[in-house]
Amino acid sequence: MNRVQFFLTAALLVMTACTQPAQTSTTDAGEALPPSPAPLPQAVLPDGFMVDLELALTPEEISTGLMFRPSLPENRGMLFLFDQPRLPAFWMKNTLIPLDLVFLDGTGAVVDVIADVQPCAADPCPNYPPSSPALAVLEIGAGVAAAHGLEVGSTLSFDRVPGYPVRDTETEELDGN
Image (cartoon, rainbow, N blue to C red; front, side):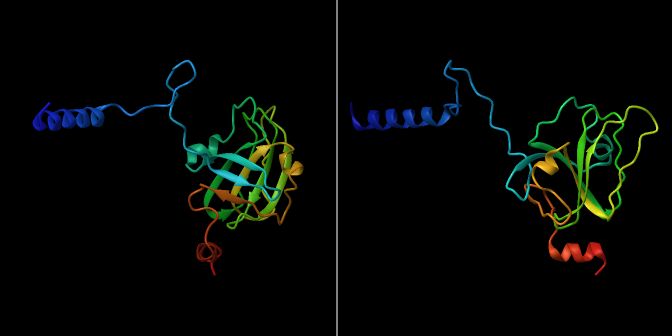
């Protein structure tokens, strides 16, 4: 093989290698695996227990919450985020599972816990407001708050929750200072 043929063959091999589809992960049976989903937002409780979160940000997500769910694993929850501290009144209409409601300030500190809130069987459904204004509410399965020592004054940390907890300057603005 002369030099020209060698370089043409090498160039052809490089071009062929560059146009091959990327390799995907496969199972032992050779089936392609779906791509790994992005990690979920998480709340880290004071004892280190991690709760994977769904975020309720829009009015529709906030009004629907965990309605119609037949179950909720211990390590799952929903975080409701508000633009200003408020006294949000939660109810259990169309909610099928008992929940703990953990009300949080802008720093992730617990301002109130309403434990073991039962599903509403008939109208009118009672409301469950916190005793102090909250910027966020964590809904978790009934008993999870007690099992992990959540009480007023406990502080949770959060991973992958955009804008929460708020920075000190944002907290001062929200509090009006």
